[in-house]
Image 1 (cartoon, rainbow, N blue to C red):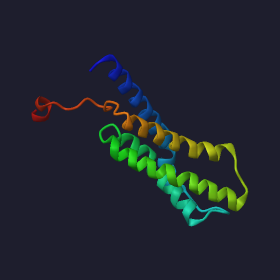
Image 2 (cartoon, rainbow, N blue to C red):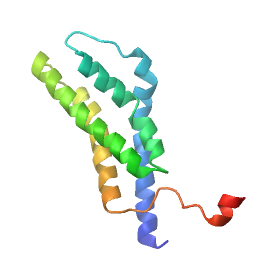
Image 3 (spheres, one colour):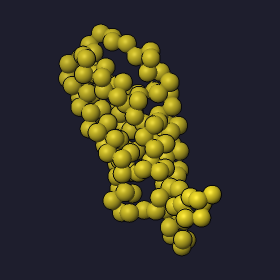
Length: 133
């Protein structure tokens, strides 16, 4: 593996580690998500999906980046839609809500770009010798 590939692999690993850190709190808090004033079933479903997506998909991307890209991309489409409909309904918006949506969306976009550019895998491919023994 040349130096450029090693650098790309390093940055992919950094992105996935940040994704796992970003997704840790929502993943742990998913049992405590409740429906508040102004929230619809779609808003709650999008929040639960996000909570169950970012951490596991970031971990999955170390071995199966294409599946994780698809999973994160679906999440990245639903979250802004839920945020926009919530803001239109209630007229409430704050920086924290926008950051909570921007993080997973940026993670998905970065991972999609890395997959599209065929960056090397985050883990070294297994050789025949390591598979046997």
